[in-house]
Amino acid sequence: MATNPDQQILLGFIQLIAIVSTLGVFFMPLKTILNIKEKRTVGSVAGIQFLSTALNCFLWIAYGILTGNGTMLFTNSVGLLLAFYYVYNYWLYSSSRDYLYKIMVASILAISIIFISFVGTNNNFDQRVERLGFQASVVCILMFAAPLERLFQIIKIKNSEGMLKGVAVLSMMCSLSWLVFGLLIIDKYIYIPNFLASLISITQLLVILKYPPSPQLL
Image 1 (cartoon, rainbow, N blue to C red):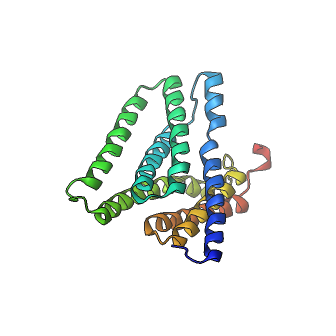
Image 2 (image 1 turned 135 degrees about the vertical axis):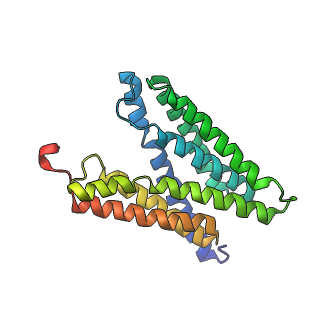
Image 3 (image 1 turned 60 degrees about the horizontal axis):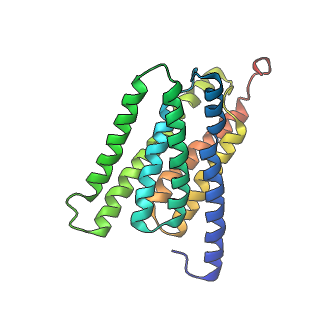
């Protein structure tokens, strides 16, 4: 944890960047959802991303409450509210009823993780933090790893159509700021998943720069 005045200033600055960049990431799908509402169909948009965001935010809210991390609690509370809005509207305009089952599975998974984190700990705070932090980190890493398949396709066809440079930059800022934040407060369950996320987001940006969208497809 930051102790001297210089570290406190740095921590405050990093917190601000983390909050702004994370909220930016959470608000990015809003345009897509509004477009879905206007057309009254989800089209080819994949809905699993909204469920994974909701699950991820829910777990980090629980971790933020458990550890007293206000920065994490605030950002993920906003993210969860937005994710609920995205999930609801996607379900509303989706022609596939399978999405409802996916919502139920995600809800059961979230409750199960919280239950596993607390059962049998005999009010041992450190053990609860270890369990919840580990499980939240695993879910977080899986969510960050989702774009890897798309990156492999881009490298294969040498065309990054559909991937926005601005989104990649914002994602990189988000993961890097949380990485530094986790290091400053010495929380491995924050800096380890965000270290991996930083590597993925940097790789994503480099791939977009190396294989820009083909002019004829713009």
